Image 1 (tube, rainbow, N blue to C red):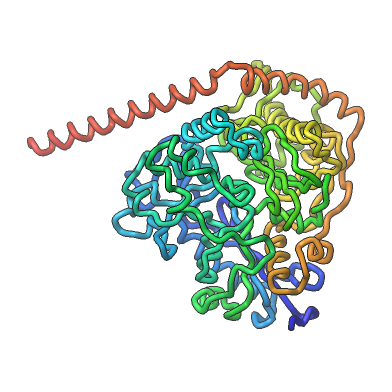
Image 2: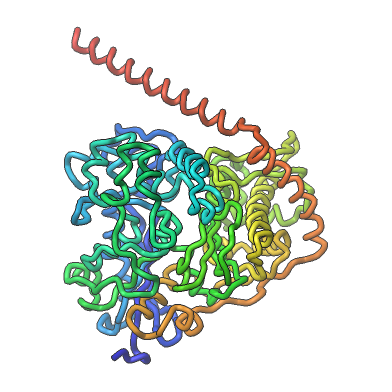
Length: 575
């Protein structure tokens, strides 16, 4: 029996650059302590950290799974210490992960990159969600699905993404056959970390449905996979297919090894894995139809429940039980949001702005926001496309790229910054309108994530979308959401919806639309939509052509460098 007055749960949120653990009281969701551990290897997108001479091609993003285990060893004990509680009172643990983040493993779950023979092979490492180098494979999957009339493609808005499980798996097969053949399991990181905690491998219903094309109890057929590549025919049967666990259920019990890592009691409940965005909805107590939760950080993921099954153009997916069990869960998203703002600050801000920010004790982001907020709507004469990391929804095309139109010699940094902020809000409005138009109405926008601290940005989103904008009350939404799932897995609540009411909370309508600003933004949004359709739908493939030219140039450069190295070696030998 669980003593609700003393019972605690731990939630762990695995993000892009770090893992965060939070200790939560089961009775009311109060967060008692937390800790963060930065991944030592961070994101490997230029070189393989273990082999600095191994340069990575464009659009790659890898990680080292050993960093994930370190979070268990470092962040969890530190969170318990920060909370000042007795670890014996912890009754469950839940985890969430970025997705689609894939780990190639042996039969027992050992990552291939940990095997000596594959330590220098990029395809043996974790492919992070933002690994977009499988766009060619994604294009072929989409083309074949439509040519064959596959019903499942409709559940994904007509497109699957280069970020997802099958595209990345096909890339692995076609670019490193030896690693592919050595891989016994193609595992979502969300499930791999639960495997490390329990010794049990369970695929979670969320990633299987949204990222693994698992619909109505089945994956794409052998015939479909074989038409992509004859050697891909048995990909599902040999590498993917496994037991599916429902969200909020128990995946297993904390093993002795994991208890030693974390300092938590052996045998406590470990919840089925989940995705950082989807697990946040319960943390905001926003699981009812019409409540769209936007988790805004480096990227933005939009999730919501719907009363019925509908086909939303460009959605990332609709999955029965994808957010809470037995309900249709919808997902959409933007591949770059905070990443775009960070890119601008890191690469395009003059030194005098940095000096002013330092002098005033502000971050450069805060300084630019202050200056941008003083501008009238449309006063910069700019419009931007938020595609610096491709477009996840509604175009589902990672060959697209960013654009700023209207630049003059008088344009100031804060004006460009404001145009980039607006572009991300316009991207969200495009997604909201796609859902509304498909009969899945959005009545409330609920924001979680680090960007909700920017009050100017939040008001802008409310004005542009013309929606009341509510804000999650926790600064650690995904970790709290994972803790809520842990409480359900431990038996403290009968289901996630009930637990969300007790443990999750939000500030309702923290921001509401300003009609004058909304009208002014409508004019800018019309220009955004024209550019969006011209470059994304109108047959103008200049963005794709530029990316192809870049790849060719980089490939030639690598070849020249290799030749130069060979010549130098020969000359050295001649001496």
